[in-house]
Every structure is written in C-alpha cells, then in structure tokens.
Length: 143
Image (cartoon, rainbow, N blue to C red; front, side, top):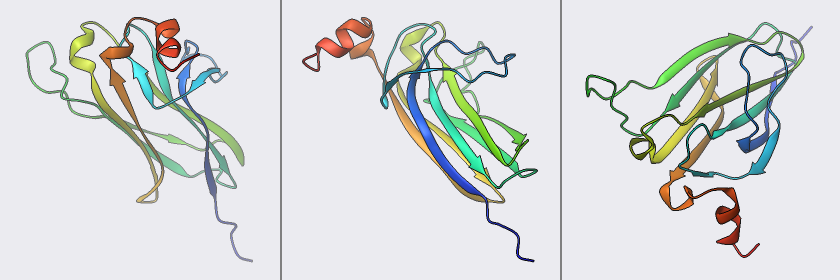
C-alpha cells in the first residue's frame, strides 16, 4: 500500500501574543504581517500545520540580521529540530526581540525543512519606523 504524502501549510504568520514555550498551547495571532515593529519583546513568526506526517523530523532555521554576541562576533543562525507528534499537528516557529533593539533591524528569514526539502519559509522585516508602538503602526496605514 502506498504511503500518504505529508501536507504542509502555513496557517498564520505575523505578530503573536506572548508565547510560553513550556505550554502546549500555541500563541494567538494578533496581526497578519511581515513588517515587524522594532520593539522589545515583540513576538513574531508563523504556525505550520502538518497533515499525514506523524514521525517525520522537521529541521528549522532562523536566519537573522548580523546580530553581534556579547563578544562582538556575528551570531550564527538559530536552528533545531522537532518531530511531528500526530497526523494533524501544528508547530509554531518564531522569535522575539531583546535589548539592544537597534541591531535587530533587518530581515529575519524562518525556514522549515523536511527530508532535505523546504516545506515552509517566511521572511519578516524588523523596521525601526514602526518602533513607536502598535497604534502608530496602524495609524501610518490610515486606520
């Protein structure tokens, strides 16, 4: 019998409510966007839905702008892996900003691979022009 092929879909992306990585609950979406305000502790990323993929290994990488570590060396991209736990499973891949904010501005590319193939990716742009808060963020767009 032929094995069913896993299906991957990004179901939401953008700004999220604060996320607790110790909780089984995924964060709640606040705004669908790829433009992220450069503010402390802002949570952004995407949720990937995996169907028919139980047992598959997903490898994820977050490529960030050239952020220096405490010694001044450019940090390597953040990566890791996770196994799909059920046949209908969701996974949140995201990050938040920390002090100092000015060196976090730029493109953050988030990628998830399965069996050597990219199954999901999204690029978020952290912008200082939106750093004065969510209200200003929307006012600048006429809302």
